Length: 360
Image (cartoon, rainbow, N blue to C red; front, side, top):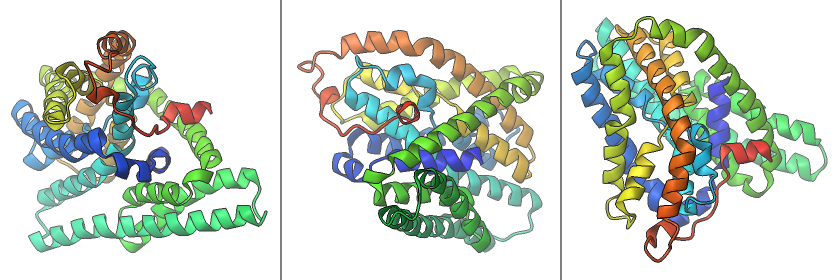
């Protein structure tokens, strides 16, 4: 339920009209940086954890690819950091979990099938095609129809404010259930439904988004509570040097090198590339993806993937939490002059962060 709400809510916050006009840094981070991060992470995972198959290494890399700007609120909400840079990190974290999800689900399913060795390549291809077509189709239908029906009901005073807020939860779950019934992926459907709903009802869905953020925030806190109280301790009991090494590489080289390559040619300076590369904290999406894999997919090394994910998220929470405020201030001072950092100060349309929507 938490994953459904987070995917729907994050996607609905992003203004697709403004994103199409601006393109720029978010497109570079999502269209080039994210795939490169996943590929490099898979290669590093296979080298550091050789017991993983290539497909399992890909699963681990994809699980840890999404970032969570909520763990770096001191960065994305800091007025000293140029708006364009804050916006790039905000949009990236809002969309990369939904983009990474199909990769996670397909690779994990293929890894599971490879274990059983009961399906042909044609069956694998058919499964992947259904996952990435029927899920989005269900999401678009529920998002468009749901937005139009909700807006019509509000205009005719058929629906009170409290039910408008509840409609977001209903549509997210409806998209998930509809996709599952027709053979698609429900989580992908929830993400696409949120994006579609936010696009159709862009100027009139703030109340609904606030409810989703409030409920989503509660569920996220519960997930983090469970992470610290139960899941993390079990993972740390089996931690090895190789697992810690991969976690550190995932948070540094695997994230920062592809990010720098993606930003080459954008006009931003080297310190900006390093700053954006470092602030890619791993959080809720990675935890939920790992739980989803362990609970729904049978992998030979599923527990190892889960443990590495928990260790990486735990290190990220500490490292990014401690460094967010001081590095934001230091970088803000360096990039404060628009004359010396013109690319960093280009005008962009502000998208609300998760915390801003919640506090509103």
